[in-house]
Amino acid sequence: MTENNTQLTNDTDEISLKELIVKIKEWVAYLKTKWKLIMAISAIGGVIGFVYASFQKPTYKAVMTFVLDDAQGGGGMSGAMGLASTFGIDLGGGGGGGLFTSSNILELMKSRLVIEKTLLNSVPFNNNGKIENISLAEYYIRINELREAWSKKPGFKDIQFAPSSDRSHFSLQQDSILQTISGSIVKNNLTIAQKDKKVSIISIEVKTENQNFSKLFCEQLAKETSDFYIETKSKKARINVDILQKQSDSIRGELNGAIVGVASANDNVYNLNPSLNVKRTPGTRKQVDVQANTAILTQIVAQLELAKVNLRKETPLIQVIDQPILPLEKDKVSRLKSLILGGFLAGFLTVLYLIFWQLYKKIVA
Image (tube, rainbow, N blue to C red):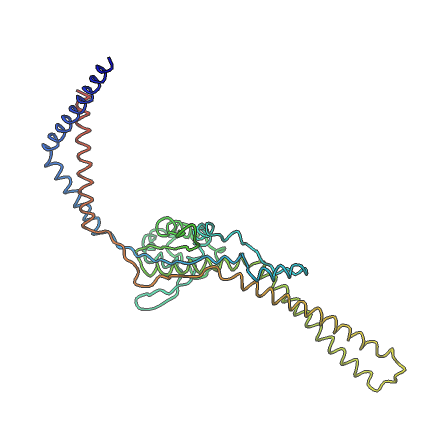
């Protein structure tokens, strides 16, 4: 009984395989009758691909790689900070440390805040042989001929983006344009990636149809990120330095005044009768002020110098490894590849259409 079932199964499989081969031969024979149509549409697809590649403008890619400076370990400096803290000295370290991890820096560089600040930076622009300084936003508008497209819009035609202009004073139209430009750059032109999760090397890639803009935007984006770091991560340390500097200047002024007071009091008691000790009291008081202010100033100056060392330790964020150098890498769609790909894709879709159309007619019939 088992042998009969096995034989039946083998026969069924053999029949199914034979039917499959027959069906394939039928489809091949059918497609052979349509070879002129397939070749014609493939040729049209190839021509479309070739024309597309011919009119496609080349893009230029600017690449900058840098390493993220993570000095949170501190080494000997952390030991000095720990020793200072035992005496109640706050050096202001650790401000914003968690913000500037490798994963966060990727999102920070693509944030609207940093991109818009970058677009308002001043860069040189060659205007028919005359070099002028304009903002990157204005540079983007000119190379993409956006102002010509706004000629029929009275509210947009005269809009300008001056270098380093105050973002808070922008009109509604300026806000809208700047937001649109930054969103387009992040979506279509900017790629920020970490080389490897095991290392802190990050690369910035800017790809546009203007190689000068690609290079300038890449450099200014790195600069703006570094400035944001200095402003944020070292904010506490910088505030601490400013406070200590004011205290130091104030105590130094008091000390100078006390020294002058001691000299003035000594002049007043010159050749004074030794029995009149009460007249020497102002001079003695001023001398105590000199000693107290000297001790206070010594402590504050020590704290100030340590705070300055800590502030220097907090910067910079970015150590550049490779910078974009002209001429940039040029990326253009190959005409030959587009012709072959367009022809293959058109032929493949034609074959699929013919097969499904034939199946549809059999089902309907």
